[in-house]
Image 1 (cartoon, rainbow, N blue to C red):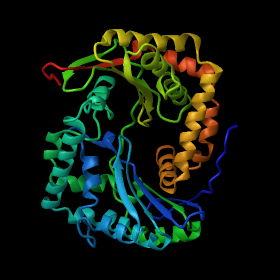
Image 2: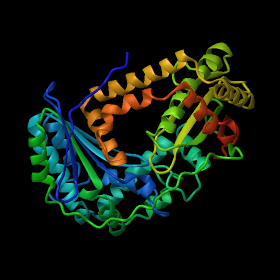
Image 3: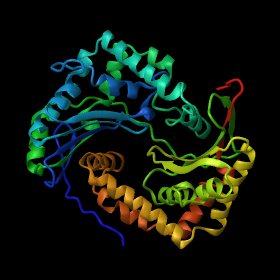
Amino acid sequence: MRHRVDYPITQHTLGNGLRVVVSPDATTPVVAVNLWYDVGSRDEPTGQTGWAHLFEHLMFQGSAHVASGEHLQVMQDVGGTANATTWFDRTNYFETVPPGALDLALWLEADRLATLPDNLTQTNLDTQRDVVKEEKRQRYDNVPYGTATKLSVKLAFPPDHPYGHTTIGSMDDLDAATPDAAAAFFRAHYRPDNAVLTIVGDVSPADAIERAQRYLGAVPPRTGIPRAVVDPLPPLTGVPRMDLCDQVPQDCVQFAWRLPVVDTPEFDAADLALSILGGGEASRLVRDLTRERGVATNVAAGALGLIGGNSLGLAGAFLVPGCDPAAVEDLLVWHIDALATNGPTAAEMDRAFAQYEREWLASLAAFDSRADALCAYATLHGDPGLVNTRLDAVARVSAADVQEACRTFLSPGARAVLTYRAGGEPNV
């Protein structure tokens, strides 16, 4: 039985262009604040890769009336939490606080939005640049398979494509940041008219909007940089490959595909196809490669939903020592061909939807995740109300749609292949 959601949603746009979305919920005395800026790594020009993520860190480095590190400290002092993340398509900042601290959370967001570039010093920039570079070393450069995402997007997209690099960027580009250049990047993208503020929890819509106006309404809009329209790229051809030795514990084979943009019927069909192939213990690849044949210790498949022309599909297997990567690659191809030829079973469709539904509902149950989802749909699609109809959209995907998506977008001939081989001299 399909569940339905019907969260109350009120929208209002302030005079400076900031879109405010409020969803009241008095079941728990908590308020979640989520602020999405419509800027991510896809907006970084040549020579500035990693700058969107760098600014995620700089936003906690201090503004006119808030000292470095004070934002997080005062949130903790009132029993709240705060953090931020950067992605290809956005940067978001969020707080979860008791209702009495809502004014404080909004004031903190307003102060850094209005004054951060005027308080950006060389010391602050150097400090956070070093933090980001160390994060790059620890999470990407010096861990097994840490380069997988970087290399997969390199295989799937041209180098000048907005998705041709990852959010962490390059050391050289991070080193090239200066206070003046960083401030110019901030002013171009961190604007009230380029942001969505969502407030979810124990507050009325009228009260929340009034508070948003009080604290953020006076922040002036700024002139931005028009974003170029990115046309969708067709599926890959020629099976581009990268085969490398690295200090990894076991061999790994990973496929990558170009998919349609997120939350379209075609993307949903491809997403469900990947779930049927490798999404969970009951999926085809997990059952066959891990339990029946015993050639892999772990198999997974899924989609990275993106909005700028294409998304990215991934499937991969970590091999049992001694197994031939080429043979495992052939098994992956065989299963994809089988799904494209015969389509999914009714049981597989039911399982894939039930898994999607469970994950979706579990996410929305938390105020902070619900606020994030509302921001996502308001920013990427212009309609936060799509949160309430998302399950209906996925449920409309048929077995025939999944089969066609597998033929069109997940065809073995439309894949890129990344292979890690354990041992030997690294050639990354």
